[in-house]
Amino acid sequence: MWPDRRIIELFKTEFPIVQAPMAGIMDAELVIAAAQGGALGSLPCAMLTPEKAREQVNIIRQRVSAPLNLNFFCHKAVDADPRREAGWKQRLAPYYKELGLDPAAPVNAANRSPFDPAMCEVIEELKPEMVSFHFGLPDSALVRRVKAAGCIVIAAATIVKEAIWLEENGADVIIAQGAEAGGHRGMFLTENIGEQ
Image (cartoon, rainbow, N blue to C red; front, side):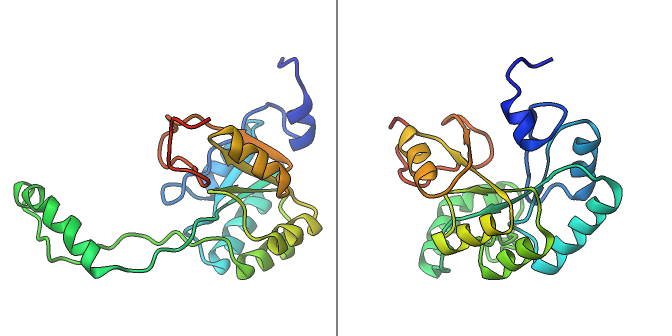
């Protein structure tokens, strides 16, 4: 058995394992399987509407009584920039041609929404045991509301400066991730992966 039990006692799980929330490729079923296996199940909510998040949490709560983590992004939404989009499409034109793709076809990329007051209402209603954030934390008023709902606040840091900022701004648990992290690195105070 794992000798340091602090995270097990905090999360109330059998093992010190957090199932990664993977937006766009998983749903309640993986969360349920992780919880049944003794880990902390994590539902990615950045691509869900408030209604869909409620639906997924209800499915989870009907099947397991284990602690639950809901995960959100805290990035700044990017405005569409047609000129910039045309530039990257032009640079990728040889690959479009090679693969037989139409560069003029619309790009149907799923939207990843930052945590907002509507999702905070979902947290206040459903009261998951944990709420985790990627790319920093939401504004302080939202963090206070999440904590007032009784949730443990978790956030990811890639560099020491981010970890200090997260602790100073309300994170109860900090995930230390390396600059080599897969998917999207959650850097939010710098883009310099060599910085420490």
